[in-house]
Length: 500
Image 1 (cartoon, rainbow, N blue to C red):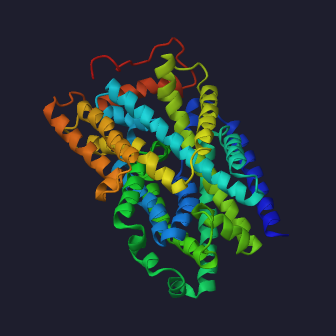
Image 2: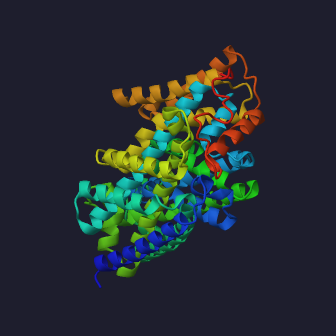
Image 3: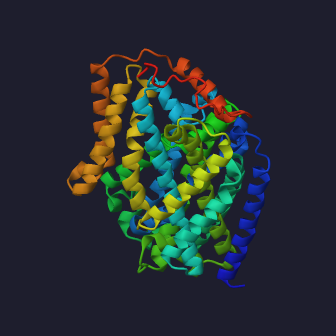
């Protein structure tokens, strides 16, 4: 069989398996808790593989290998930063499992007295951030389909959006974690084999070094990519993981706090080591085809033109699985946020049939993300632009809310407004001056400063974290239980009762 035929055969087997798995878990959904948070019973090894798998999606494979094609080891900085973000989240936030939260929005509400303004602003930002990550995965799926089938960029993106939606919507979070566990294994085997083949072909790391510009082989490609851009990339991705609802969903769905913490620590370490293979892949393409027209085509070109059919098929299935798993993780977070926060904000009651309402909401999310993907041009560029607008301010208020007891809702609201405002201003005016050329750095600094100043100038919060977490538990029963509260009232409507 030709390489293309072998790839299509492998993708067909994988898609069939995922479809069966999704239907299997969909048939076992008995209540919203099963669909949205896997019944909070995800075991250790499955969760570890799932976290590693959902970290390594489009950006960490297609986008990062393209970055390595352009700037050497800087391509490894992308997945490495995601791994560091997981490590930070595991160290600092695994203890949140004890409160049985459903969404990161609930955790933020507990930091800031369940203030309505902070909650609404945070929930909208968190929802948009996951739509952004879903857009990135659809872009990657489109790139793979276009490279293999030659459908054209736009039709490939639409096809990727439809395929991912059909495969990931039915089964919920439990299907996501088991698929992501498999995907993690495929990625390690596939990219490990690729690194071995590439290094054997070029004569080891010394041979690879000799075949690319010297600046590519500096620490994380810093002399090629630039220390400011490199710092901005690392900061935006680490903070993006800290403020990512999908990563918190892994914490909340774990069987215990111990499982949540150690799964994240091990998974983060695996992703950090995995990052080396991405840098090798991108630089290997540069040696083979320095005239490649677009950096995002580096990995697809390598697969179709330079690898034996078995490895090409294995890598394509691994990348397809990475894209699907990451997209499914984003979709799970979108579904939880939609049904827990967005739906209630619009309708002022919870739905009678939460799972059906969540699936309908996800269809809308896929349509919107696919439309945005059709207008985006570069995966890494898209990540660097949208994360400062959606995740940077959230990361500031999460970290300060967690570790600075004087933090209050007034400071949080100021940071949520200031951080994206600074980032957007710098993007609009295309500043090229030093630190101002990397929007995430001044945006985070401005958000932190304004948060501290406003918090110190206004009264401290008068409500405990545990008090609000308990109230949230009562609210969740209207969604998670077998029976849904249909009377249009929250079980415990603390919002608007004077806490903010």
